[in-house]
Each structure stands twice: as structure tokens, then as C-alpha cells.
Image 1 (cartoon, protein in one colour):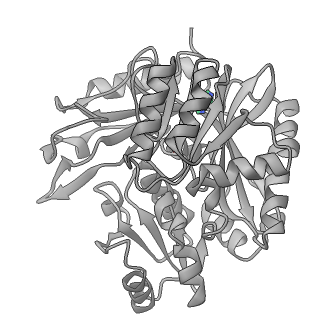
Image 2 (cartoon, rainbow, N blue to C red; image 1 turned 45 degrees about the horizontal axis):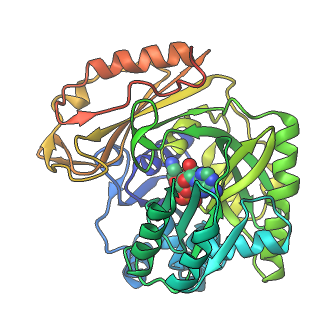
Length: 420
Ligand code: AMP
Ligand code: GLY
């Protein structure tokens, strides 16, 4: 069997590695992949916006299964398109992907099904939004409706900041905006809860805590994620039951009313307030870097899991995990998440010696003439599994000290909430 992965980040390298060790596939293709996947798979440069070209390539190479990593092709309907040609594909369809593609779609679902989430209002023009902001309590959260790579969320400390957010969104900073969302600020601790779905049933796929800000002490700009650990320190059986009963089950019921079955990963982004879960957002994929953090703990063959999902047989698949703690530190190009230089060589990266429980996943890298270059904002992910977070952290930062790349930076405090 042959398998293809769409995407080029650390998440996709981690999935690619798990597929490689699953030994189920004679050939792996990555569209377009990175320098890390190049050593495990065939990297293929295709225009990911051109679904027909993707379909033709899949037919030409007789690829049996396609895994979609990032949100954009999901929200754009790549699953629906490939399924029309009877191609086996893992990921939610266009309708279900609205859970991530439209924050207002999700909020309306929450309202209809009584799903706990921050109180909110939907505003169709600047005037109404500003009128509400006159009497609002602060801090308050203003959000663009559509996909904005995590940048369309403004946590506003006062009226002036909120009005600026409303202006930026309606002026088209994140694409055409007919509506925006203003919501209550929830104070608590965040947690990412992952599930995997086959259209009929779902199973838990781990928990994690991301570190979204660029600098130590949760300072600086919001990023895609600077590091993570798994499991979350907040998870317990009672909380897990509440998340499933109050949030995930009613969401699936809502989708089912729309005639839609969910298949793929579901990332439930939560704020936990006194052991009570509130939905902050859904993502219709694995998190990045949460995926790199969680997958090394997976003991079950990932190929079997994906195939079971595509054949609606997840019920028969037991998903087993290592009990070890996992920590991931992301190395970025200096300047990220704003301007950074590209095409900088990372010297001797391939000579780096790692132990059995250490993993190095590439993100924004490219290989040229046997050399590896940084070409993106988030570039490398160092992951370690250990008996406790403290020793995992020590090992990772020791590995990082051997990295010969002055163009990069990383946070020094990943895991600070679980490590003294
Ligand atoms: P989102 O893209 O909706 O996940 O929002 C990005 C980040 O903004 C989240 O990870 C939270 O840290 C923060 N955030 C979003 N909504 C709220 C809220 N209602 N209250 C507090 N923080 C929020
Ligand atoms: N790490 C956050 C995300 O994947 O959206």
C-alpha cells in the first residue's frame, strides 16, 4: 500500500515518521514535505490549491490513502473533492471543517446545544460593535470569523484596543469580513484535548499544553506554538467525562443534524475554570507542535488507526500509549513571528546524535546539495520522552546546546507549569 501526507510542518514530519515505522506502506509521499520528510518519503512539490493536480498525481502513483495535516485544504474541501473520485482520505469534510473555518458557525452550534463557552455577540458592522463596546466589561475578546492562522484573536484590555480590533477586522486585515465576534474573557488555564473519529465513534488521542507566546514567561507575540508537553497537568477522569458529555458529544450531534459525520482528528481547545471545561475553539486537525509531542507516545500502529478510521472500524482498534511524559521545544528563525531571514544553513544538523527517546522533527527546512536550510518561521522541534517532565526538559536543552545554528531561537521555559 502507498500513503500520502499533505503538509510541510513538524506535525507532518511526525506523522510521516510514525507511518514509516508502521511498516504498512511500501511508499510514502509528502506534499510538499520538508528536509526531515525527505529522508523518509518522496517529497512532491504540487500546488495545494489545485485539487485536480493533486488527484491526478494520486492516480498516477496509485496512492491508496491520503492524510491531510493542515486546516486550509480541509476548510477548502479537499476531502469532499478526493472522495468524489473514490480516493481514501483521512480528514473531515468541508462542512465539518467549518468548526475551525468559521468561529461563528461553532459559536452558534454552542448556543443551540448548550455547549459551555464564553458568552458572545455577533456584530455585522462597526457601529453596532462599537456601541456594545461602550458599555462592555474589560478585558474582552474580539475575533475575526475566518481562518487567520491564529492571528485574528484580540485580547483587549480596554475600549481603545477593542475599537482598534473592530476596525482592523472590518477593514479586511484577515480577508473580507461581514461579521465579527466579541466574547467574554475567560480566566483559567488552557488545555488541548484530542480525539480521533471514524464517522461513527471516536477515541481519545491525548492531551497537551501548548505555549503560544514567542518569549519566556508567556510574553511577546502570539505564535503557532513554541513548545508543548503531554499530558496536560489538568486532565483527570472527571474532567475528561465532562469534556466528552458537555462539549464533544453535542457537537457531533449538531453536525449529525446537518447530515455530517466527522472523520479525522478533532482538536478541542479549552479553558478550564475550576475543573469545568469551556470551549475556546475547535481545530479540525492535530495541533502543531502538539502532534509532535503526542505521537512519540503512541504504541499502536498508526497505519492501522488511519485505515480503521477510513473503514469505520475504529471500534475494533485499541489505541495504546506509553506512560512517559513528553516535552517538545520548537526552534524558530530569529524574528519569528514577524520578519525573519530565509535560506540560512543549519550546519551539521544531520550529524546530531540523539538517544532512543529523543526525536527531532523538521518544520520550515529544505535540503539542497546535501545541506539543510531554514526556510520558515518555526524550523525544528526537539522532543524527548522521559519518566518525568523535569528530566525530559534537561535532555532537550542539552541536545539544543549542540545545535549549530546562530539564526535560531527558542524558549527556555517550556513546561514551566509542570516543572519547579
Ligand atoms: P483561538 O484562536 O480562538 O484559540 O484564540 C487564540 C488564543 O486566544 C487562545 O488560545 C486563548 O489563549 C485566547 N483566547 C481566545 N478566546 C478567549 C476567551 N474567550 N477568553 C480568554 N482567552 C481567550
Ligand atoms: N498549536 C496550536 C495549533 O496547532 O493550532
